[in-house]
Image 1: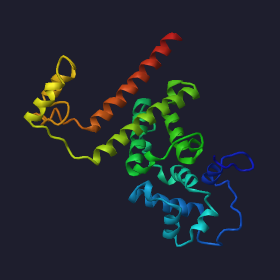
Image 2: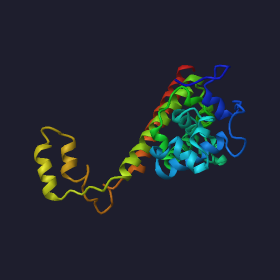
Image 3: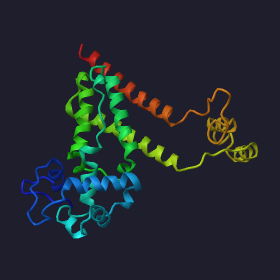
Image 4: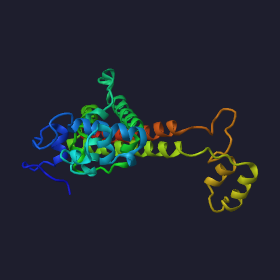
Length: 258
């Protein structure tokens, strides 16, 4: 359970926004919430979230573990402060600000994708009602709402669109991370024939021909590289489909109000 302040605000949210008043029983100087969070993020960026412990962060900062507990209650609170830190936010290209909702929203999704690529450990931290109140999450949501402003959606609909798109971006970032840790698979003719003997056209009438042609997985790309599409192209196609759907819905709404 997340501890709350006297006002009822979750404690990590108050800390992240700078409204939490730190009791005067901590180390007199050299330690702060910001330094703790920055060090934890540096460890996670270099070694993954599993390397982040209260003891490790304290050691890197030159303090005792008990000193950290005067600022951060536990690792769960530290993780919330990490994913909510404004230091994670990517730099926005202001030239996209008036390029139309579709280009703006696409650029917003790319910003989010870049943030995950730079901080892959974020994919391992559970989200929830507390994390969405932290600075990083709220700034990202605000940028997305700015991109959606001309579609005349309700605030609730805008948040739903942001949730759908951000979930899509996160899933692709996770896929990229998983693929990066695996070797390329190449299936020779004998292997394809063996698999094709059980994955037959009778069982898989649409997929089996693609498998046998080497276009599903493990095949060699043709002269044009047609089979070597890559995750970037898959990501872009999926994002375009989501934006196409949003555009159709918006235009349909416009016609219904004429």
